[in-house]
Amino acid sequence: MVMKTNLLSFLILFASTISSSLAKGSLQQTLLPSEEFNDCSNASRTRHLLENESQAQISVDLAQGYMSNDDLEWAIKEFGQRCSNISRIYSIGNSVNGFPLLVIEISDKPGEEETKPAFKYIGNVHGDEPVGRELLISLANWLCDNYLKDPLAKFIVENVHLHLLPSMNPDGFSLRKRGNANNIDLNRDFPDQFFSVNDDEDSRQPETRAIMNWLRDIRFTASATLHGGALVANYPWDGSEDKRTKYYGCPDDDAFRFMASIYSHSHYNMSSSKEFLSGITNGAAWYPLYGGMQDWNYIHAGCFELTLEISDNKWPNATELPILWKYNKMSLLNLVASLVKTGVHGRIYSSADGKPLPGSIAVSGINYTVTAGKTLGDYHRFLAPRDKYEVVATMIGYKSKNTTIWLDDGPVTLDFVLDPEVSIKESVLQNVYDCDCNSKSTQEFVQFLWGAHLEVFFILIVILGFLLFLFRRRAKIKVPTSRQLSGSKKTVEV
Image (cartoon, rainbow, N blue to C red; front, side, top):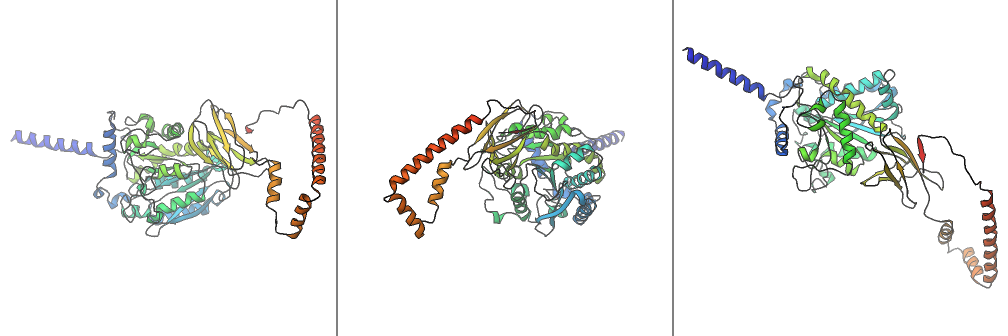
């Protein structure tokens, strides 16, 4: 009998040990399992398990303490009223079930077009990963409350246009499932560079189309989406052309690694991960996916986007939200601030009339182009700190210019003044060709030039040429032989 009792006790103890080992990581479990994931296939299987959790595990009780969709809408609108001096609220569209996709813009001049860069955060891409929507409301409230007290808050408000979309998938949240109301994974619904899926825009989900139209309206420099189920900052590419799990870097791999490291090292414990070196990972090396929003942003919108996994548990207990905010707060702030604390920024002008040009900026050795704004000609090029870069500005109809910059000591402001390719002589000829040659007066003038008065016309040309020669020679004499060097400035103009 004693033997049976001991055996029963052992089985109960063994079962409880197995149960606790299978439980999802909580905030007390700050690090992932100690064994290294040297085999990429292991990391891939881990990601599959996280993404295909049984929906039965997501109970209605888990939503207790989280804002409902109605609560979220009220919180956004209330914030807009309370912080109207540095914010505006707008919608980019509606979900399948008609819930508005509301955005909070935070800036000292919200809604105005300026030469400041724009950054966006998107939460709740997957309906069963709701931590992001809570953290973005916390971020907005912290900036509002500390704008006049904290230097970092003031820096962000005055130097960046920050846009926060707390929930991209409100229907999935209310249904407690990963996909939207049509059961579509929104992070697989974007056009893909390797495989022609979702090329028909009309076939995409309304939430996907809303994001794509949003980026057509606003020229974002960088962005990040907030997910759950791991603790890592993920960067492009998210897939590879042969679908293999392997490191597959984009042209700006150095810049993305630096960008991901900013978030990871500002986080409470992300950088000390034992699964991901320094708490960052290339997407394709971790788990290849296709139709993702991250790669689409970089390819089609000129926007450097990260995918941030910010909690080991997809749907942690609401009591852990304050701790998650504490762990992610500085990461969220520093990533936005890095937009203007590094890289090269400036404007492109025409030397002919001084007007801004919507030209392009390229960096030698990096196969990627950033486009300047159509109205102000401003550009923002995110780059990792390095000894030097060669920056090239181009514009159709203008001569390109290039210069070398050093980024080892903060950002560089670099303005380009481009010269038109068309010469004065060509402009005169163009004006003649563009004239209304059907008019009677024009025909008579042409007949006069090419008729009997051709010799007189030739003599006039020679005289005008001689006078022009004398004028130019006199102008050269008046040019001083030396010039005064101005003091050093942050803004460089070439």
